[in-house]
Amino acid sequence: MKELVCQLEEILGKEGVLLDEPMAKHTTFRTGGKADLFLMPQSGQAVKETMALLESHHVPITILGNGSNMLVQDGGIRGAVLQLYSRMQEISVNGEEMTMQCGALLSSVAAEAMQHSLAGFAFASGIPGTFGGAVVMNAGAYGGEMKDVLKTVDVLTPKREILTLPAEELALSYRHSNIAEKGYLVLGGRIVLKKGDKAEIQAEMAKLAQQRREKQPLQYPSAGSTFKRPEGYFAGKLISDAGLKGKTIGGAQVSEKHAGFIVNIGGATSKDILDLIAYCQKTVLDKFGVKLETEVKITGEA
Image: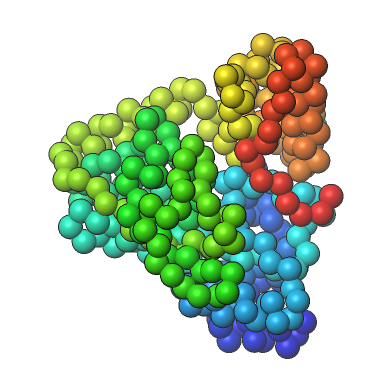
């Protein structure tokens, strides 16, 4: 392990390699055990070199963005967590085109677009994720989605080649792309927007932010919508109609503001959250015959 750590530090610098790092510091649920290795690259090339090195040592790799859609179990993560976020957030603007690294927060991209009077990305201003994660799931809100603005994406392939792909090759549909199926890793990309009025864009972002504050429990740690939308239904309404609003297990609670959110009201463990997820799934299935699937990704050891 010591030799591997030294080699990783040559690629990432000492500040880019952490040992036994608590995952509760890196997920928006604020829960989760420790990762054996926590690695923070700064470039696509560093990602490529790091993954090759880990694979040569047969070290399991878990990919992490800003942790806004991940629940890490209390036993933590064996092997390495490769965080494509904290040191991969560069954004640049060239006319109506914006280029960003995979770790750029959507809120930061939206703010930069607004500063340059570029319209068409306000919909993403309140989505609590990174550009890379948003591309993978074709994230959307308030009538807009990534496929509306995406031009090209830089990916690392399973053969460890860095390619630039047009958006048309990603099979983008509702909350879906073919990126995971093909084993690609998003390193960055480009979006194309349109010139607009800065004040109008700012007003639209403020309006959407107000709507989120009114409807979502933003005061508590969570991973956003816990469940996918079942066909023909809304997960939050099903959970609410089942009488589960406010239901708690340990420090985990079905939000009293929006039943589609499970939140950490203080001191929750990942097991509390998982138990509450399972309780909601069983109750909704028993009452309405509808199966709820989690939108949040669950990883790590129990």
